[in-house]
Image: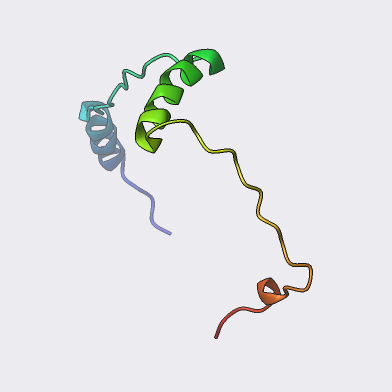
Length: 73
């Protein structure tokens, strides 16, 4: 294996020092508490739904359903 010359190391070092890295800084808003988030979200959701929110329905699962065990071909 050949050794790398000193001049090559110096050129690489100069290249590494001359390159500047531009890093973006994100100006993120502060994280909201749950109460603040709810105060913002509920009116928006009611506006989208057009009134009072519907109660959440829990889907009933069929115990005899085994389709999740087989992948379609």
